[in-house]
Length: 111
Image (tube, rainbow, N blue to C red; front, side, top):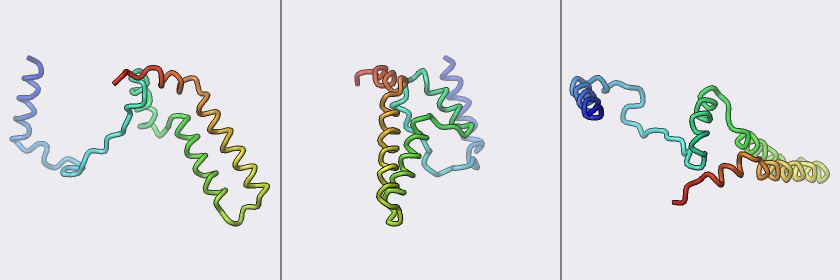
């Protein structure tokens, strides 16, 4: 019954043109894919994201990307490349060992 009332009010607002000039009208929605985030963490992650924070694994991936770009630079000498590659490997191992990452893997529903 509540759904019917809501649908009716939305239809009336559409008929009055109340949704015609909304920002982003006519553009595709920007939906974040949070399918790999456990349901109990989605709201918290969304709040943090809206506040400008990102999950630790995103920061780690960003840092890995920066280090990989540095390794590819021709001006970087071999000892520096070796150090950067070790740091990349450590960051990847740390990301794989995160307890919440294991939890996320086990909390997915079979699909």
